[in-house]
Length: 112
Image (cartoon, rainbow, N blue to C red; front, side, top):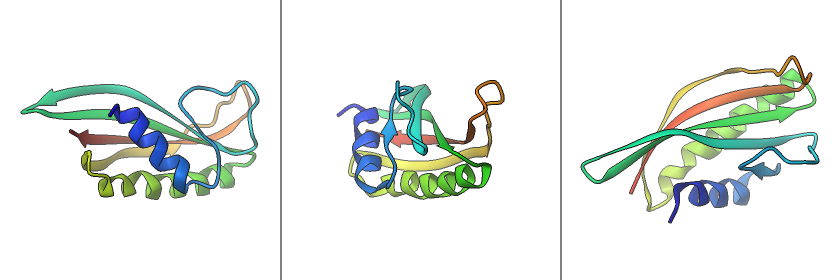
């Protein structure tokens, strides 16, 4: 199964906000957007780097949603297709041009 689908299905089941793989036309007050930004393969194990952006109507809300998102992503290790999940970094990533509050977490995910 494609890694994006595994992540999407996992997050959609446990997150209390919508999860998207591309920017939605109509933006909810809170949502999570994730995207694969890199990857490699070694000894039949694949590794992919993903960004997870948590959007909210306030900076505090985006920060809280980021923590919930990080916990949900770490829970991917329970999936049989996932060999490892490592938080690379996370930070305030507010979009000043669009005036939207967001946090971004970057994860390295090893999968079969």
